Image (cartoon, rainbow, N blue to C red; front, side, top):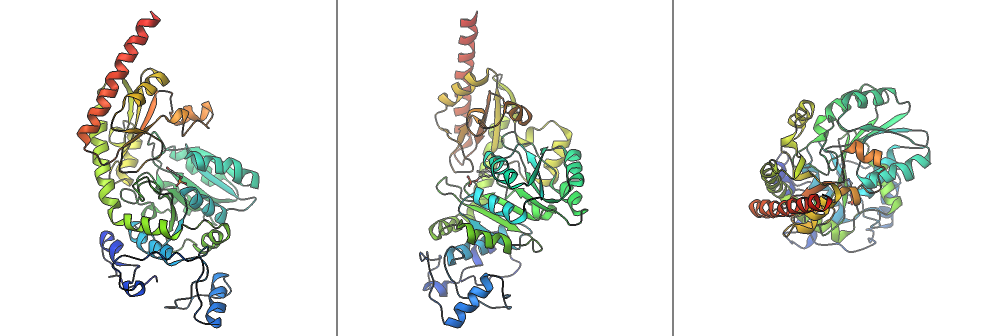
Length: 426
Ligand SMILES: *Cc1c(COP(=O)(O)O)cnc(C)c1O
């Protein structure tokens, strides 16, 4: 099914539409069919024996060999098509593996790389689910997990150099929700000096695959919550891991077969159909977000706006310019007046929705301190810059002028609210 008939060397926007799918294998349909089958009929008992030998690593694939499919927990045609078509979107990637959520992709990757006694260095703040994974699964397995603050390059270098048994470095950049950036290239260079070299993994959900290319900066693996920009319509859960040629995909694939967390055929098909528009959507969303952030910057209700084009720290500006093509579609607004002001803002928005998640066509706004980051300690929230007045915006593809007007009228309500509070407290 995973035909290699693409024009080799074409641009990503071409490759994503031309490789990985052979219409002749789907009765000529121009778009892939959905193969909803849990099991596959072998062409011969010998072919079955061969397929199992390959699956379990007792034999190696011959060049040009197309082994029989076995059972959909291990592999199925729609996963193969999706995995083939997503590779060109990630610069530097040689392979991809699809999962039924971003967390499944992250968990399976880390469990393939780390065993008891090994160590992991990771940036904080981390996505809440990944943070729980570290504390509730990896640490109890006797994997040493060392946090380093996102963007603090010297501390990250030091942790990479001084941690015995280091097998993986996990970087989430930009950090959620304040967009603090970590220098991927520098961390990868530091890791490359170690022998054995730890795997450098980047959670590229916020800016990839359109605007940030970790594999070209020395990272070995990127992980995605494809639920976000790759899926793009807030209507499915999925995850993907992509790697450079030298990064081992087999241990991750074999654990996926064991855990049973492959993405199902229907979801593969839906996600596959979204790939050609990822870059179009992300460009529009980023432009919208930039216009909104820059349009709100002078509002007196806002204490600070976190958005990459509005960074004031020279080191953060340097990292942004060196590793991101565009600023992306996530904005955080720190409002005067704390939680009551933030809640008034959320109550007052009319076009944007108050919901967690991000990357969809529709604009979403949430209050991290009481939702996505409610599980963090006060100290962790302080380090991450998550105040009670902070709201996070994921810009969609609506007309930016309508969104800006919506946020402005919500800020007017906040302003009135703060004035009434001041009066009652007098
Ligand atoms: C949403 C998200 C995840 C988890 O992905 P799911 O698809 O919800 O499992 C991981 N990392 C980041 C940065 C995310 O935003």
